[in-house]
Length: 338
Image 1 (cartoon, rainbow, N blue to C red):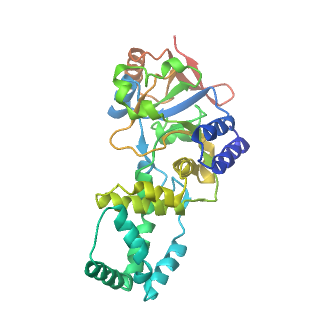
Image 2 (tube, rainbow, N blue to C red):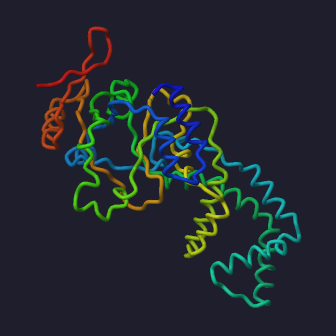
Image 3 (tube, rainbow, N blue to C red):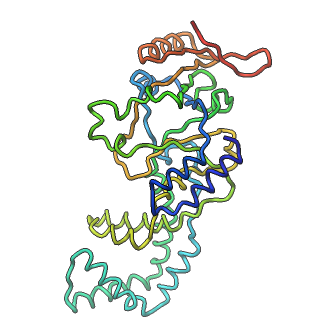
């Protein structure tokens, strides 16, 4: 996909209302031009060898990626600061909040006497008028971006198997290897086809694959940040019974994880990146099993590593073993080893 194709995809994604997910998915799929192949660049280490041996792809959260601006989002801290300062300077803020507090306690099935409610409002007033109140709230939302990144799972690919920058960054300066995945070969995707998959959330709900969009304009994730903050506080309080009411308060956030995950700074556009993502809450290890169509050995790969990766790739059922080289036009290329 070129820059214009990715822009069309992004605008389509941002236009989805989230009222009919199936209908939205069909609209979004029409806006995607999928390539024949996607590539993953890998170093030679114990983790990548184990993944190669068993055809496993491990998802990672965005806070582990090398780009500190991954999930290129904007949270309106100034607007929130003005909001919290308004609360701090309003002597009647606690009283104004009384109906909301009562409704909130009602959802959690907590009953307070008049004296207890009066004490709670008094305590809230002390908190809200404290000079450290605004600073605490802003610090929390300033860090919410990192909290969102911790809950954003994905696997990264590139359309280009001969991207020299990616070979340098992610394949040990051409000493590693690249895996090629055939988008048209559904037989190579093992997930969901085995007995052990029957109880797997990944197999049931899927991990869609999307192109990245590149822009110097951040995506405004303020509403999602507020939603995440409330959900986090409820979970820490050990109460998730009123999450449905919270969801109704914020309206549909069905496509927010996709929007947050699929935008990066313009300077990264040469990566031609795609991402397989988990658009829902997950814990523990997240993994899919997918047999690559080919493995491409690095230009500067050590002989021992070349033999090791070749043998493991054959055992894993990878049909094509290729060697990268510099062709007569001075470009990075690869040929099939017999």
